[in-house]
Every structure is written in C-alpha cells, then in structure tokens.
Image (tube, rainbow, N blue to C red):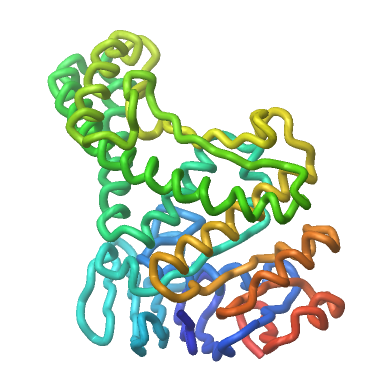
Length: 366
C-alpha cells in the first residue's frame, strides 16, 4: 500500500498544500509545531475517516476556515484509487472513493497505515484507556463496521453518564436508564469479541519480535480482560451479552450512587507482562520502550498478513526518542513498504534513513 500524493485545503495549519511521496522512505523534516504531525494525521484519516488525535471532526478544520478538504491518490489491493474527504463545520463528513460516496466503515480496509508516535513509547506504563485506544485504532482499519460500533458506544456512554449525573435533579431520567444500560451491553458484547480476537493476534505477533529485540532475554505476553462476569471474551456474542447484563444488574445501585458507568467495554484492559511480571508496574524505561516498539511492529505484521501487502508505516518524531540500538532495530525492519518519518532538523537521522526529504515550515511544503 502506498500514498502517491495528498492535497490539503483548510486542514489544521495548512491553508493549501500538495505533497508528493516516494514509494520507499520519506523523511518529513521541520522544526516543532510546523505541521509535520498534522500531515501524518491527514494521511491516517484515509484509513477510515478517523483521526488518531481527536474524536471531533471540528478540531481538524483550520481556525480561519469553515471547511477542510483532503484529496489523495493511493494504491492499495493492486488498484489506484482517489480518496476525497470533506469536513464542514456543523455537518457530517463526506467521503468519496473514486468519485463514489462512501461511509467511514466502507472506507476501512481499503487503505491501511500503522502509526508510531512518541505517546506510544509510554503505552506500557499508561492507563488502560491508552491500550484500548491502540486496539481500537487498529481494529477500525481491519474490520469494517467496528468504527461505527465504537461511535455508537461512545454516544450511549455519554448519554447514560448524563442520566447518572442528573437523575437526582430530574428523577424522570431514570425511566431511560435501563434501556441505555441494555444497549451498552449489546454493543459491548460486539466490541469485546473484536478486541479479544485482536489481542490474541497481537500476542502471537509481538512475542517473537520482542524476543529478537531483547536478544532472547525477555518474554513479552499479553491477555485481554473485561468485566469479571465475562468468563470467555472470545465466546458467543449472546453469552457475553448475558454476562454483561448480570454484571450491570449487580452494579446498578453502585452506578446510581457514584454517578459512574461501571459496566461495559470502557472497562476493558490489555494486560501486558514481561517475563511474567506486569509491565505497567515493573518494566524499566528500556523495557517499556522495547515493548512499545514490539507492539507497533507487530501491528504492522498483522496488517500485512491481513491485506497481503504492507501498510504505510508512519514514524512521528520517534527516532530521536530512541537510543542507537533501538533506532537500528526499527530502521532494519521498515523495508518492504512505504514509510513516512517525521523529525526535526537532524542531519544524522536524515543521512541514516535516506529516501526523499520533504521540508515543512509553518504549514508550507518545500
């Protein structure tokens, strides 16, 4: 999979810009806050109409604009395609593929990209929300419809949370509580099965990479956890739904008292162990970075196996965060596909990565 060209209009800090990419390594260079990550974000939006930085499309439109547009030529699944995404304030985004109107779900799986950014270096030590986000971004590209399920779950969660916070002032809100709880359990059952299946593939792919990375000295493993009543997150959707309903019923009073949603897919966790110990609590700084790198490189392998070709790999200002050994490990594994690397004006990294150099300055491309 490759992106040949992208044009941005009113996107973030880009008034108008066109970028042509090489099929191999592309080094996107510039000082901080010039628009390097904004460019990668635009490329990422082509994978399923979603940003990796925000849930809200309005934040993607430049401050001085009422709309934003992305137009890109990509190659995927042996076909050349043109993707256009239009964002307007107060309206739903419009997506076109080869001139035909598409939904975000229909766009998913047509073009894939794996992003590795500085925040991912801390994913091992962060809370469960960061690991759920990592899985959600990947599964949205792999499984059409997952993104729509996730959006529906967020909507239900927000509405139920409003009921739990306001019911004392408006007791009539409780008439809707059970219905929202039931809908959340139904959507959660679907999300949990998707996440558990992906976690299984991630465990199988990341383990060997981490072992190679650590010279065979460490073992990386992971397991998926959801609410206690769900015994088998890979089981039948109906059984997971019933187990969630049971958990919900037991915690209904606690939800009313605490004004918090205590049942659902937002409670899920991906537990990551290094040598049998929880990485979040016991991993050193070096182990944390090695594990995070292994997870993202494993994601790339899963995508390649799924689509039969490597996805676009995007490394956002990551190499400067790594020591020489980890830099070499990453650079030795980025062949065989297109890579977009952002960095500051660092001549050493530019020389080592080679490829085409794209200079970004204040939303302009040279």
